[in-house]
Length: 169
Image (cartoon, rainbow, N blue to C red; front, side):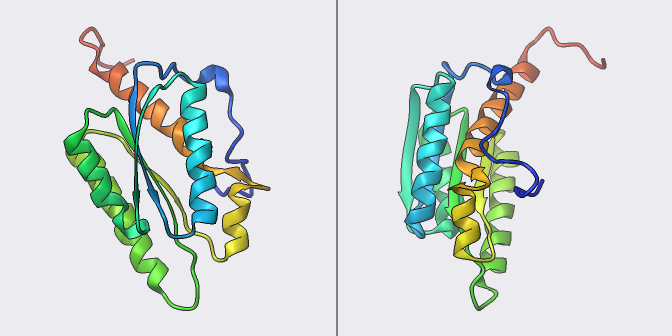
């Protein structure tokens, strides 16, 4: 959903599962730190707000490096989910298309291959102001949305793993 239609920071906190026993990895890109660091801070604050006390953070040079760092975290730490935070602003060339497609596909494939939710917390705006608007500005903060998504996906994984579940409705 377009962030112009839904504030990225607004959600019903009463519907979010307890994250006390959940272990998260967060990979944050250095490129555009004025954007990525507020996203990261909001993400961690949201995880902690819902009880998480175990968050492993790594920083990488840019958004393109997010998937490999997420893979490294998954293979070196016992994690329930990884959140990837980055920002690729369109600019004058089509570099953003190559980076965004590659990162999105890699994150998706990493999730599928490992069974560990890897969350796409990457902004893909047309300009710097649009990024600011989504990193704590008028459309909220995508870091909050990424954290909530991670908690919900871990809860879904745990729910589906329960041995007494039934087939169907």
